[in-house]
Length: 602
Image (cartoon, rainbow, N blue to C red; front, top):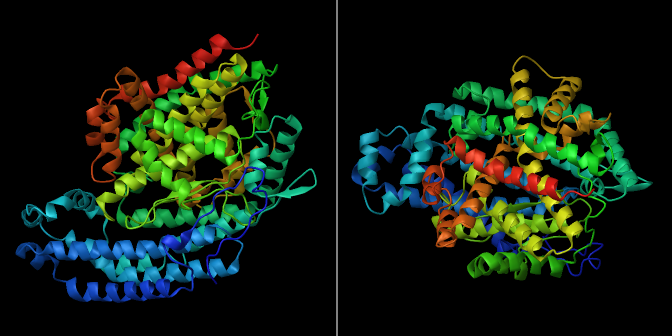
């Protein structure tokens, strides 16, 4: 089996859509290069364990610890390349059993070899602070100080090495297996709409169609299919929530989201302040907006399938791929020619996969792969304005990942709290560019409305998701949850966030079950709200004074995970611990709603 491209239906409708060229990673799954690197990684892992296990304290005292860190970094890049290739090859067609087997085999091989590396972080954290500080005073090793600082934060939650190995080895048959089951099930589901069987992505897209009947049919189809599989999704949710509870209990995390906060390098108090600020703003943001929208549609309340409905005056043009590319790159260039320059290779070199195809994973993402290669963007492009915004979003991620790559495998990854910065900023640039060019009052009104809805979905909905997850994981500690309990929690948090102008119709209660972040990355969702409010504050800073802003912005992106968010935001005069930070971000959304209210149609 190889990772050769295959022609996908529907490309002509949007022009020639780009497809991935994974040969920058490996020519194919059975290529000699892939086989060689997998064996090389296994051998290197064994040698790493043999050369360094039990010697790290001695090396720290002797000033030779850099050698081990460099070898670890090189092995991280090599294994990351293998893992990235196997995953990207898989998401192109999750229904293909050969791709599934290849992914599973690679994951097992990487788990086996990485088991040999578990000692490294554990042993480093056994070194006394004074000894490690002396080692870090060396010029070359000092570059890794941010990585060591993050490592030390995990020290209180480390377990004995054999237990860590057990947790690690069983991840393939535990969390990893349940994640894969969810992905393959979701990709294989069919949603029958007006006699036609569609995948999840296409069905959800119909819920933003101008035709009310199509929206309603799509809603009913999603509800029917998800309900038919509710036992499986309830079981997956129960197992993964329990799995997390076990890990948290053994490690000694106090709060159900503390492990996520640790990974994000953000304090619990900051996230609590974010949740509280957004929750308190529900009435003046989402409640107010949806009441206005209901009025525009001549109703007191909107049905659930009308929440994301385009306005009657909205521009429903379909953008071909060339137009989408030009819109986004022009917006990027308007901010800085350098930003467009960094983004350009994604379009020219097979770094984007845009077609919708059978078995392809739904949604969109930017995969950083490894610093020695480059990121890959996955889209399911359907030509709408929202798809253009998604391109701008994921391209922002890609630019961020490219710029941060110079930090190397250990410090290039950006904490989730800052990982959404470039993506949301890229969206904002594209929106502002489109808005500036839109002279028709009705189209401008509809564009503003669409942006407000995107921001509400990013901030209000994601914090609602976070609140839902907190309810689920808290309740799971007391026992297994029934579907009815999950449904009730979903309806409760949804009603609180959306407000009285949205009717949560029968069938909506099961919609929690298709959200992938609940499965793959518990409590990930608050990062979207963090990122949106952060970008709103950044953009306000940019509008106040653009002099020197671009270079400060690029410095933030280049830093990757090498600096704490407080240090990265300081040059912009922003502090996430200050309540005014969140107020500024939320006030920008409120300002757009004000603008809509002043310009709303009679």
